[in-house]
Length: 290
Ligand code: ZN
Ligand code: MN
Ligand code: MN
Image (cartoon, rainbow, N blue to C red; front, side, top):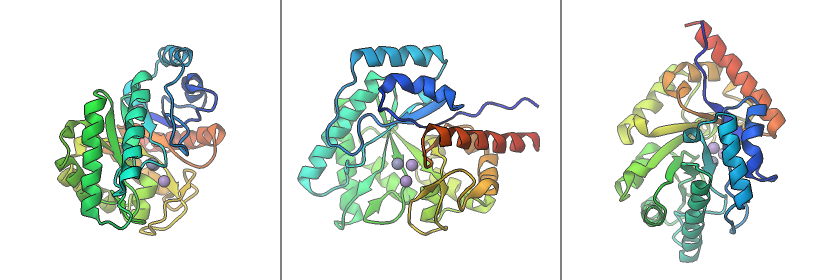
């Protein structure tokens, strides 16, 4: 049986410029990728140099990669759920700039963590998120936002899909919001993605609250911690508590195996190449047992 191709990639370094990303993606066995649009630990970002963009776009074509499956991950400092005005304003501005960098690189999805209300309560946090999204959607008209599920700690919004529904409901351009499901965050938040029943519950919740068609990407990460630990520490594929068997069950579900899988596992390109090979092996065994 011919294996249908999975769409897979990893979080790629941008230290050497964006132009290296397509080539390195193919070198590690991927056909898509995630990148930061700038140094994620800084409040500053700049538009990429013209030469870098041209080289990047040329290599996307050269390696026959599909931009529809690329995504950027927002910086770590951004918190659009913050009820502190200065933090919220800086976050909204940087988010807008990140969207513009995405657009320049023909990347159509920007993944963010919904944010933390830092004690002000979930209701105010959700209002602040929607307010920020309404602003950036007006200022940048092409890039869509992906909301990523997180664990329940530190006032985080987005550890369940009822939160996500409330964000969509308060948003003026709900069609521009999609979702990334992170398997490590999900498992640590209490979703047992290693069991068919747990997976069904998750899919039912997503469909009921936001609509399954809004699930656009998977962050495929193993986890160092136990189910419901609310920790968020990623592990290489097969080395953590989800494990090879867990991923076999997870990827047997066609909802997950038919959307892009992005690895955010420990290490760099070398480790990610190994993880991609492991996922392909898991997928091969699923397909040959069908
Ligand atoms: Zn993330
Ligand atoms: Mn993630
Ligand atoms: Mn994480």
